[in-house]
Amino acid sequence: MQAVQEEDYTRRLDFGLWQKMLRLAKPFHRNLWIIVVTMLLSAGIDVALPMLNSYAIDHFIAGGTTEGLGWFSALYIGLVLVQVFFIVLFIRESGFVETGMCHHIRHLGFRKLQELPFSYFDRMPVGYLMSRLTSDTQRLGDTIGWSLVDLCWGAGFLVLCSAQMLILNWRVALVVMLVLPPLAVISWHFQKGILESYRQVRKRNSQLTSAFNEGINGAKATKTLVREELNTEEFREIAEGMRDASVRAATLSALFLPIVVSLGSLATAWVLWQGSGEVLAAQAAGVGMTVGVLQVFINYTVQFFQPVREIARIFAELQSSQAAAERVLTLLDTQPDIVDTPEVIERYGDSFHPKKENWPPIHGDIRFEDVSFRYKDGEQVLSHFNLHVRAGETVALVGETGAGKSTIVNLVCRFYEPTEGRVLIDGVDYRQRSQYWLQSNLGYVLQTPHLFSGTIADNIRYGRPEAADEEVREAARLVGAEPFILLMKDGYDTEVGEGGSRLSTGQKQLISFARAMLVNPAIFVLDEATSSVDTETEQLIQQAIQTTLHGRTSFIIAHRLSTIRTADRILLIQDGRIAEEGTHAELIAKQGAYWRLYTNQFQDEQGRKIVGAS
Image (spheres, helix red, strand yellow):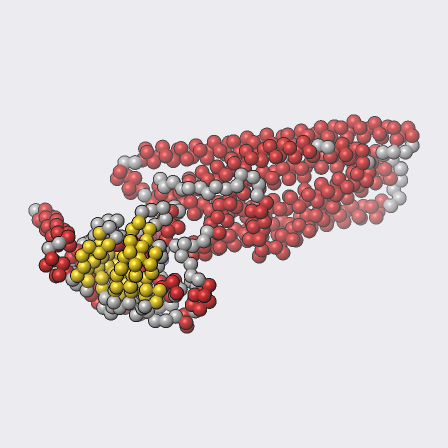
């Protein structure tokens, strides 16, 4: 299973990180302000209701009168109804923020994935990215939508409650608030452990998602290589690591909240003891703390530690969610390795806002000038490489695996950029043009074709959604795909299944070829396009190549050398350099490395035919 290098995140609660998250929630600032104001007003009502109870005890009960009971009841009922309205309002707004934030972050994340280059996906497994955009994003939506509610109410209630207690009896109030310093020390002590545990939980969760993804996609390889037991053992290690981290996080949280509750109970007991004495003394002296005021203090003290508990819970929640926030922001802040300059974007636009009216036509003359290239943390692949491909020329690249063939093609397509030197298209450094300009004029057929869920027609017009049905059919006819399509029950409306699972490899390859042809590219790339298909399909593709590559600048990476005999030029690549070059006939006549490669392959193919015939 693929290992992922985790980022070195901060180890303490990072308020700057949450400021970034609030900036990310800019589309929902109005809803957040409604939540803040609503919860502060709600906290004010929660502080006012015990005072009304105090008035009722001292005036109506102790005073033995019902005078003013009508307006008192109306005020009390009115405050309760307003409180109910506030509750309904904040539930509605918080739910909107939660779902809206999830949608917003996933939209930004998907857009970011469209911008990132091949190199990013080379390092990041699918499951890891899926975890960031599903469970991590959901966690952030919950935190911002609902924890803010409790935080605003708790902070508002603590401030108003403390002020009211100080007004009523500052000595008793100060003793109650003496509990806060030890509570702060305890919270600080638990912070590091809880945060680190939840980071491990999120990390293990992404590894689990990745393991599930690889296990499902690689089910056939697992069966054929008999790796069931080994895979299960590897999965058990990841799952047990997540379980242990979850248990540790839950244990720390379970210890944290009872300590807060215990401190609150001690404060309540002290208020009962001290307040009762003052009430008795007041009754004897005729002045001092009344029963109603004592009731307020008991009520406040009991409620005082409810928001403290809520803030403590939110504190733990923020620590838990910070790991998710760090991972999501890391994705959203990832900068592509290949970016257009501001001047290029200003003139030609970008992938999402192209200015096609400014795009120059591509003729397809390509030149490598003293190009060197190395992958990140990898060895040098090309060194001072030079090559000129004329417009309309078909060039075949052959050589051993790792020789640099795919690197050359990837540089042509600007999936990567030279470490040194430059690549010119029609005499201009392609970095002076937009990526989208170049890649909109590319046709690329991979060794392993990928089809998207939908119909055959949908897949052919994937690069040109506006293409008419007749254009789709014409592209299929050009590559020889229409005969097998028409044999299917639903023809062009046949569902291909996930990844094209309902079609053979050869059928998928022909459809991907038709898809590339439909965009009418100026530059065409065939990357081992015939290596995984049967002989009959290879012949169909060969016929299509003869028809469709005429007049286009084309690069063919070939394993089967029989497919490139008609290429204008064949380049034998060894260790990132051109070892031999010429037409098929010229290279055979030299009897060099290409001749040996071709002869060996021809003998192998003849041997397989003889074995197959027998």
